[in-house]
Image 1 (cartoon, rainbow, N blue to C red):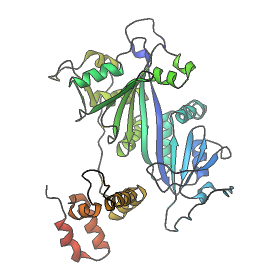
Image 2: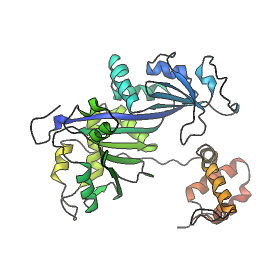
Image 3: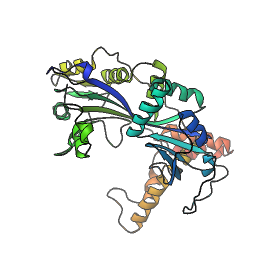
Image 4: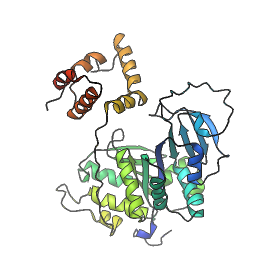
Length: 372
């Protein structure tokens, strides 16, 4: 891919799936292994939870691919767990599995499994949705790599445009940056803590050098990566689009960027920067539409428990009792009593009251609705 021309070219751009994570219900580990075309006797079983998902108690790992489970019976075979102590699952709990491909897991799966079975990521995603009744994609990372000797842009040049108010990412103008001498500059578009479609632009070559991966770092004269981290509903819809469209990942990424991300020649934000037009080429822009569905009160309660909300509430109440609550938190329960609720939540509560035949409480719920 090395170019002798100082002008960056499209031939020195390539795209990757760099993280993929999805959840299934009432499926065993052996069923997953069979679907993934991976052997069932090579996995190392470990005790360990998955951050943000308290229900998972252990995971099986092979070549940077992990299968988290909430019930050991999902393994379908006997294993020795004498050193582990686990609570027995409630008989009413449904079985859950989370499959997680890290970046290296994606490379192994792509280079070995997909190639050996004449598959692409698009076909794999299509098979995934066709095979299992309900696939809940939690995260997918897509990245576009520029290995031109003189790249289209750098993290620093993008940061400079952000600081001059010459970019928009959808409706957002949020950005952040971090940088060290070893790792170089990293620029974030969107909020690193809250965005469900965060863009990260960084010097991949410097990162590899800092990790001592000299061979990988020396493959290209330079290496700038633009990564898009999709989570929750946008991850689901993006994965479905890749499965449906059956076009190259690079065209999916460019099409998304052409629609959502813009860099302007001046603060009037009327004319696109030439480097950005050349970077995206002739890609066709598209927009992902997210349909927001109202969840039941039981589902909200389940999320509060497994998502860790109750644990945080307990800690805050403990700190409040000793006068150590973080600034502006106050008493958790006093705040809760004054808290207004959105109409969507009120609808879920009213549906639940109807189910348990307590419609007499509806007037009290109506008093809690935020009128704004």
